[in-house]
Picture 1 (cartoon, rainbow, N blue to C red):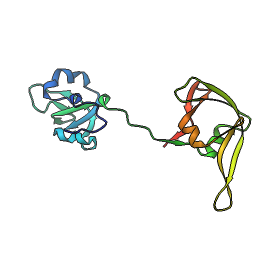
Picture 2 (picture 1 turned 90 degrees about the vertical axis):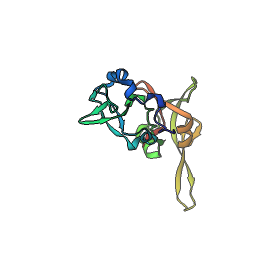
Picture 3 (picture 1 turned 90 degrees about the horizontal axis):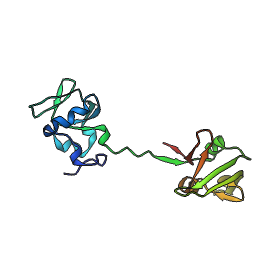
Length: 168
């Protein structure tokens, strides 16, 4: 059976044979199902808190007044991927001002660079006006997409590395 991509393994779904194991998940959130095939798409399952595990029954997992034969604790699901996009120029300007020194590094690399934000590079568009194609850091020019894909910057206040992007 093919299961929802968020479920790590079919063996994580608890059944009536897992009573003792399931008791440790009482008062925890998870997904309940009346049929095993409901786990093909977890949206078809009933979400809630496991209130009790009833011994000696086929439908052992209790949510409120309803009993279910299958349950998967929420912690056995893969975290949903967060979608992000590159900063646009106005968002970049909200974070940095011309003259700011920005500490950046290539993702997954220990090489740090400290570059000054020196301006923006404008290109003419097909409509005749100009648009910002990239930002200038030191003597280098970076597109917003390149910064987002390849680099991260050090945020001094939080003392951690952050992406050049925004969660959607």
